[in-house]
Image 1 (cartoon, helix red, strand yellow):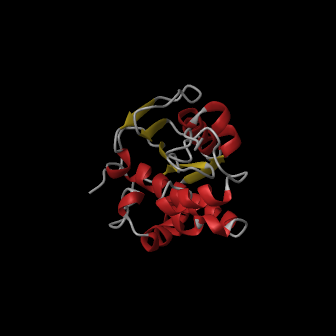
Image 2: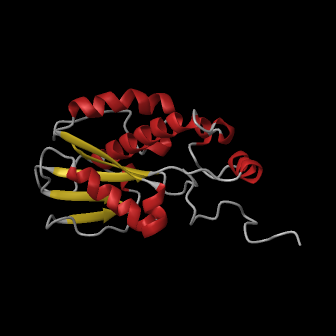
Length: 199
């Protein structure tokens, strides 16, 4: 069972991101404030859930949360500021979108930068421990997947609908064959042998 709270504050916000290890597309974060009474037997770290379960949970989280926010940080920005800073920026932007100001923030992972003057705690594997972080992980994943499905229509040869921009063998083969798109992260190692040329 996931715990409902880390702190004693009424308005505790959980935040998480999706798409950090991808070769294309944004890193997407969500922030969620759940009521103390929130309970759900299916909710867990989004990586442990099937796509169907994530899609089922998305409207429940949106409806039952006190507030939620979603933010994308796109590949151009990722290439400028690096993926760690982009992930934290996405989390900050998702918190910006909450209609209630959180009193405490819990973050999945071990890296964060202070947001305004709100106290916070980073929690390794927090998405498998606290309901609000798990809820944020589900929203971040479903919104990012939706974005990748949309851009798949523009560049179907990379099969982003399936791989969501992650470095699968198929994705890398497509990069080798077709080159890169405006959605690819240029500072990422897009091909394992990127620096080797046949002379």
